[in-house]
Length: 167
Image (tube, rainbow, N blue to C red; front, side, top):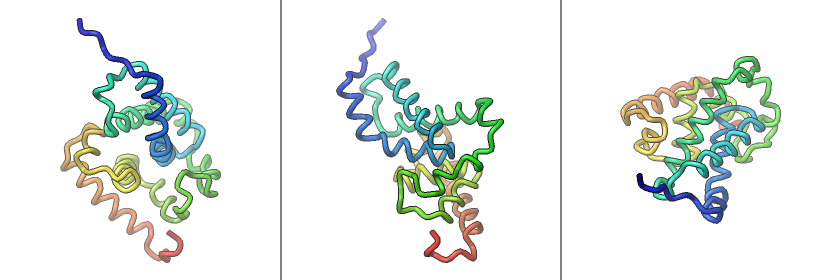
């Protein structure tokens, strides 16, 4: 049985520095709660450190681990018993990774169904291509394209009547 190469502490530190903020932003938009997002990012790094081969470490793989961790968090009993929109004051007040985002757009994104919110975040916040998003989410590329289009339509409807300054 071949021995799996492990990640060194130095390589892990580089990963945290390189992807930590992007992962926090994604988890925050995915989960809607800063503390839970920070926990999800930490849990994801632990999973990567314990099990990853250095050859697998690309942005798509790291984000896939995070998305799966966030999905696990959303399935937990805590998230079913707590209304995440009530947990959003720190996010809505500007305590986010992206301080230049305004309330109207952020709130519109947060109200999207999860499958649409995740493609919007990965495409426009993480600047991933459709193929990368498909690998991260484990769905076909045409599915990602359709979800992006539908998400944009829903965002446009939600933002109707809102001036661009409110974005």
